[in-house]
Amino acid sequence: MAEKIKFHLEYEIKSSPKILFSFLHEPNALAQWFADDVVYKDGMYEFSWDDEQHHAKLISVKENKLVKYKWLDDEPYYFEMEIVQDELTNDVALAITDFAWEDNLDDRKLIWNNQIEYLQSVIGA
Image 1: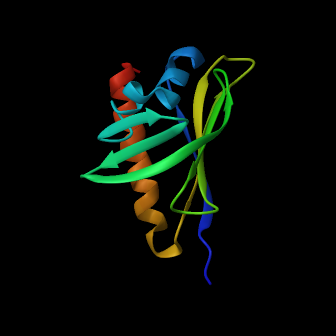
Image 2: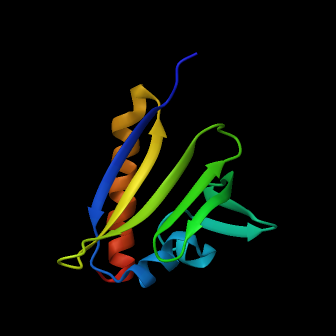
Image 3: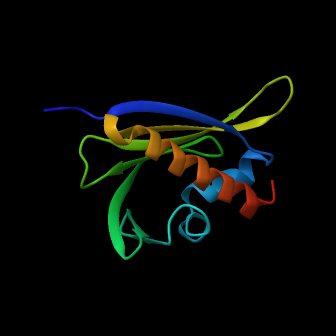
């Protein structure tokens, strides 16, 4: 059976890690840029896009640094969003780790590009 391809993307974000972090794990903030709607209940996140729901569990969190979600309907895959801050310049970047099938890898990257662009406009970055 074919496996999904792991990929990494990185985006410069003009925001403090603390503000950016809230947009990576708080349901109301995620719903402003990541999904049409986000509901958190009993340790589970329900992400909705175009009336289609996908469930994920937050499996790792480091305050103002990292969130990692595991899709319940797409074992063993996950997606991770890590805040990277340059020690010298204090520039902030958001590093994305995700997985996609080879035939839709470019589309998946384009989706992330669009979502991050939307996130930047929501934050005012």
